[in-house]
Image (cartoon, rainbow, N blue to C red):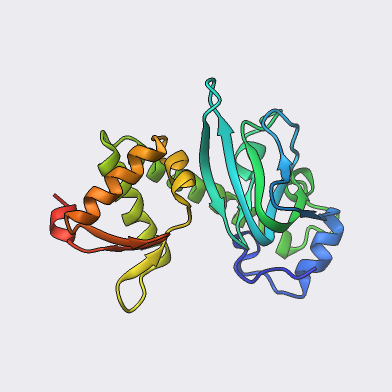
Length: 225
C-alpha cells in the first residue's frame, strides 16, 4: 500500500510511523472499478476514507431524482469525515469512483480513542482531523456562496474563479476545471443545456475561452463587476 504524500490527515507525521499506525487501526484498502460505489446514501459508514489512487465523486439525489455533485476528490483527498465525526448514524451522501480507484478506510473509533501506547503521532493525527473538518466547513461555505448566486452566469463565473484559485494557472493563464459539462451542471444545480448556452455566450463576449475542460478567464474587470 502506497500512501500519497499529500494526505492532510497525515500532515507532519513521520512516514515510517504511518504504516504501523494504520495496522494498529485495522485500516483496509478497497479497490473500486469505475462506477462502483464506496457507499450509498443511507448506508452505515463508520470510517474515514482516503483516495489512494483514481478519483471519487461525492453526490446525492434530490426528491425529483436529479443528481447533485458535492465534491470531486483526487488522489490524497479524504471523505466521509464530516458526517462520521458529527455522529451521523447513516451517510447523507453517496461516494462513487469516476475512474478505477483505490481507497483507504480507517475506522473512526480507532482514531478518536488512542490505544494504550497513546503515541505522540496519534495525538497529531487527531489534531489533523480537527483541522481537516474545519477546512471542509470552509469549503462548504465557498460552495454555498457559489450556489447563492442568482444567475447561471454568476454561478459559472464564481465556480471557474474558485477553480482557477484552487489549481493555479499555466503560463498562458489557462487551467483545468474538475468537471465535464454534465458534472459541472450537477455541481452548480443548473440545467446542462442552459449552462452550455451561457458558457458559449460568455465566450462570444470575450469573458472566457475554453476547450473541453480547459478554461481561461480573459477579462477580470468585466467579470468582477
